[in-house]
Image (tube, rainbow, N blue to C red; front, side, top):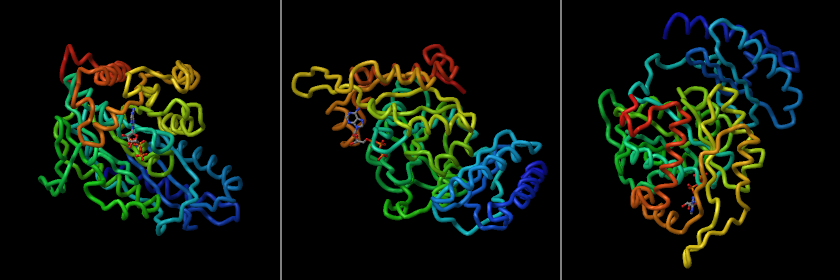
Length: 363
Ligand SMILES: Nc1ncnc2c1ncn2[C@@H]1O[C@H](COP(=O)(O)OP(=O)(O)OP(=O)(O)O)[C@@H](O)[C@H]1O
């Protein structure tokens, strides 16, 4: 850790001791700090409250954010009030290492959703395979700790091996490098983890994988906008975020929250992917726009984010996923493969990347 980082941690500790809770006690010694991260001047902090204290603590949160932002060396500060139970309090959690664990990775892109079950993991895998089809080297980090589905989607079995420096070797499938919490932890174990444990598990997984050279690493985020998502957005060098939504959910507050969270930590929103847009009848192949047409595009416009494209609800897509052979791997040039490749290309254009056709490697 550099002297600058140490000084900044000391300054942050000083601010935490000065800030007083509504009951007059100093925040720094109150045991209310459930998580604190500082990395390269980006500070995120969560304060433990009970649900009925939210209004009383809101002014403190705003003051604290302003004080942290005013510190020399702080580029962004994000404070959240969380109603989850706290881990044993720490005043300042030091950044473990100064070396970038993702130094072999060109662009890290988060794939997020406001809520669970909208097809985020399915979209991540097929988008990743579309990027491979466009000629890029791609990895997926499945950080969806509560519902890791990457092993099923890619048909991965066994445990990842150890590389040099006791780092985990990513597994390989369909030309992708892949790592998932589901390969490391039993699902029942992760289900009972509280916010701070989720945060540290994800941060550790981020640092402990020996990625080979990658143009793009897609991070399948846990659904929602809580502490774990914030820690990831704040603590990772994200080039941008993609939001997956079903048409009926796009107008809901969850999607807005997701967009607001990334904006707050200065991560550009590369766009929204509408999943399960129309229903394709498996018998006759006819398309039914159950939730109407064009609504998602209009809604994305209202939210001020690009619209990357729409994926229909099809039996073939779900069956391929369940069989561990994603549809884009099965048929990259089929109609769904084409849809995902168009989405991938639009996303790359938004990233300011070179056209893969002109230059297959972005690094
Ligand atoms: N376009 C689609 N057409 C048909 N089925 C789909 C489509 N997208 C997703 N599904 C199916 O919907 C279910 C949920 O998808 P998925 O697991 O990708 O969602 P998720 O948002 O990642 O969920 P979670 O929040 O639980 O991790 C899966 O059975 C998947 O096969």
